Length: 212
Image (cartoon, rainbow, N blue to C red):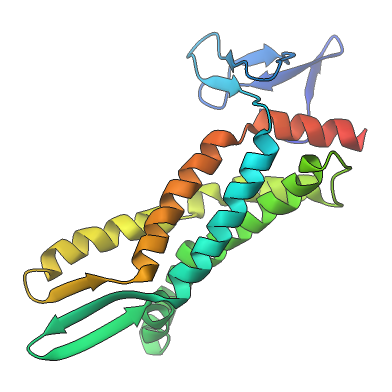
């Protein structure tokens, strides 16, 4: 795929399939059409009308959901007349001393800081494109950062792990889901929709054309 630097053959740019690395001459794809790899069938590019606006809206929605997911109560437990409610930030701080400090740092990075950084980088990249203006300075670096952080953004892994754990805890105590749990569940859905709506080829192409 395009990543700022291009491979040329006889002056014609090439793009590589992200799945099998097959090289293709860079296609000229109209909106609402799809280009696929000739070898494995993987989608290479799929530009859509108003895609930038959808990506921007979903990234902003994800940022708002993340704020609620971090600071609002996540779950509450009732057992033997005792009640306890906790938030994600409380869980992170609970491991912030002694030998558990690296775990606290890892949790904060993987489920909060990295996803927020990625959403912010996508918004920084796409906002000028929504308004048909020149990209901000460093937009290519910001989008490259967002792509590098994608495998490390693990909010969805966190919510799946918590759900599995709560199934076992439910037999020992009464479990109530707080607003943050549903915010995290919504965040997972919004993140999937955003990644599906975002045509990386089109974004790189737009950044390249505006830079030129």
